[in-house]
Image (cartoon, rainbow, N blue to C red; front, side, top):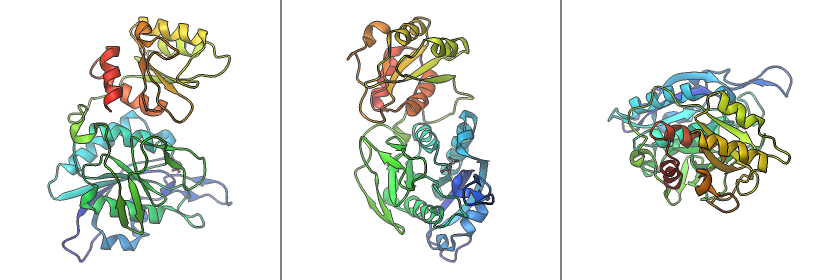
Length: 334
Ligand code: SIN
């Protein structure tokens, strides 16, 4: 977007679709995600011209339920290329909220730049009453344009909040305050473009990540299995037969499994499949060797990561090693 202010930072907006670009299809209920182009979204917020020189790129146009590893790799490559330009200050990524936390955490691990990378989405489509997308986009650009946002890892902006991609999770199906960070809290607040940043993240990211740099051509298959009362072993065995190199169990409570699931995951680990115990509870730390003997079974505890983020780290980890001890160290590091 052209701006008359020469001192404004240059920011690349990479668009992927989502509800922020969604249009209602008729009645008040249904809508189609990714209906509007990034030019239309940026054009709807003329105030952005006072924040930054924006250059836009449509990387994908999908609802984020269709996000996948190949788009992640493409997006990471586009972000890395943009950030390598010394004249470019930051990257903003428009994205559906459903899987934004996974994309954000992936980029947090593979993009080796201290420059801000900010993901933004919306819960209401662009044509909805009181759509949240325009203010979220404005705030995201304000965060990305601010020098103090550097070095904090990949951020997610929505509902006047700034979140660390590693910490945040979508917790509500429809409400605009869906993003919550249950463990280490908010990265900050942003009100109409004014930032209040809190402490930087503790876990390693971006410039300090061993995964930053050249991207792998593809990611290994890792499946998530959801535990429940009366669980059988069949889905675990099916995942292994389908070629999974890693399994994340969304375990009950502290990442626990019943006897049938434990027998199946133990067999998978003996066969060389990396097994990570996470939790379906939505909060808390899964520690090693509490009710499950991880040392004996060769399992990995997810530490603070929820199942979907544990899957991201395990996929990247498996591009380096299949050794459970080395993978466990990654879960304590990232
Ligand atoms: C999506 O994730 O693409 C749909 C939901 C949303 O963006 O809020």
